[in-house]
Amino acid sequence: MRLVDLITSVTRALTRPARPASRPATSRPGSRPGPSRTGPKPGAPGGSGAPDRGSGPTATATPTIPAEAPSREAAPQVAAPGAGGYPPPVLGTIEYDLLTMPAPRLSYAPEDDGDPDPGEIVWGWVPYEDDPTQGKDRPMLVVGHGGPDGHGLVGIQLTSQDRADRGVIRQRDGKVWMDIGTGEWDRKGRPSEVRIDRLLLVDARAVRREGGVLPRDRFDAVVLVLREHHGW
Image (cartoon, rainbow, N blue to C red):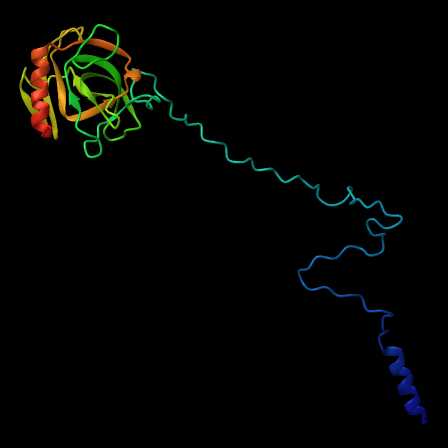
């Protein structure tokens, strides 16, 4: 080799940068460095198996979200007798269905025996028309017997709200009312009226009390209007 070439080769070797023994692993920009692999693995012999509590942020327990609390709105309460509507008793009153039941036997037979009889005004549970499962205590005039077995009491609703003069029949909102005057059944002495267009089938055992007796002449007038209205 020529001297010039030898000097050139030596010069290049001395000026060439040294190559590192091993290439370190590179990470992607923005990535977090991984855990050191030099220490023992959790759970391995020589390791505690528990995370190092001396480094890193302190772990906090995830708060438990309580279940939705039940509504505090009070459940509908059953009203007591005399305080408004309440469900009917086992033995109560239903509307008399003239399409499926025979025409009632009208009669006048009041007796002072403590039992409800035709011609007497009694108090008992009467269902509302728009919701038969609800009702209230109301006075009724017993006008006879009827029902599927023919032994039930037949009554008509009575009210002390003035809707017509005595003996006068008045229709209002499709309802027919007849004035029957005053009597011992109303302590305030107010004129009363009976409803002609709606009949009630009453269980005698559900009658709460008796209020008085309607005089025979007034009862006969009511029966006459009932027969004419219902076509008996």
